[in-house]
Image 1: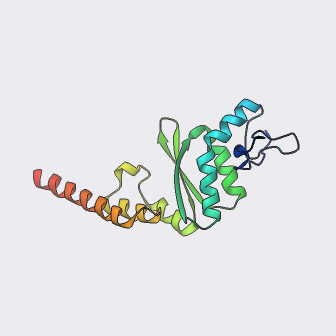
Image 2: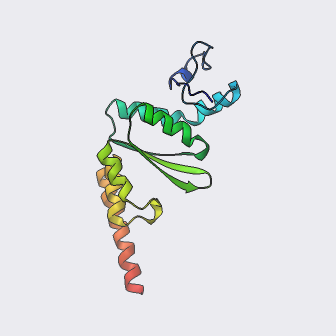
Image 3: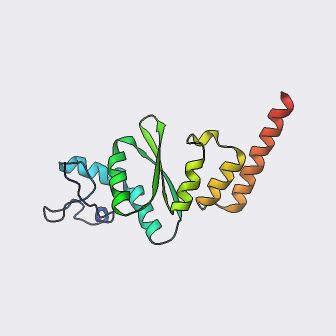
Length: 153
């Protein structure tokens, strides 16, 4: 299997499919239909890499189809971007990538994001660049629910 490189912006041109000279990368696809599907499926992932490289984000979390795990790993390793991949279920994976220190913090959290504590959820939201005030509101709602649950026990 040959690993090739994808220009994430080639999908915006009339020549979305590469010519024989300009083969897309980091793909296991050998036919045009498979390649077009992969480019489409990984459009958001490729845009996140662009944002990371431009310094817009220091940590990214994206949920992708598990069938692309090897392709995603190859791309991140080629770009020398630290990453963490956790299975979600239903054939999906959560991919954290970005600054090594941020990825290390993400690795300390419960891989099941719906099981995070209020504090962990708050920290992760802030690290991902979510609105601070909204994260504060979310945190307070979590804490209120915890308080109600503890009083009913």
